[in-house]
Length: 241
Image (tube, rainbow, N blue to C red; front, side):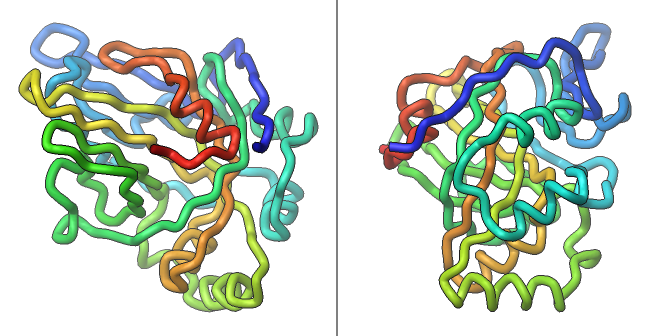
């Protein structure tokens, strides 16, 4: 088992969550970048499918150059200096921070599986399990258009992965659970990619896993539950089941 750390962020950083008006009441939930909407997440009712549509593009990485270099080599442990470097990027709230391993698959809207709430122009996905009344999966959401990614850098990371090395991405994460039409449960572990677009694309193309330093926001928002024992176990190194 890998230990995870707990962290409290007292004020909003570069990123923040906001619920804005719609039809004269707070309704649409966003991830903001410097106070400007970056992603439309969905509405606040908790019974409609999530949206996850990028509204503006952001050049990456958001992480500092020194941290980006460390992540490129691969990170296994959460150090205090890593925590303090990332805190200025984060929305206020309580977090658990862990190194998770995942094997992403790149999808676009035409490939989006049924009962997966995501309308980003491209994204990465990994299913956990699906039952007749529940679909549980993982999403990695990009901040930049796919056309802006460097094929040379992707190839470099792919070669690194195929040599058995494991570079690390960085993400702001949250759990999004919705009871669609009050019946079918759609539950997603969502990662907004702060650093590592080329690494994640390389892992997807190579069919190999990579690691992610994930800052999982524990604080609940309207219609969104707090994380549970199963998610905590996953961040401790257990299989999600």
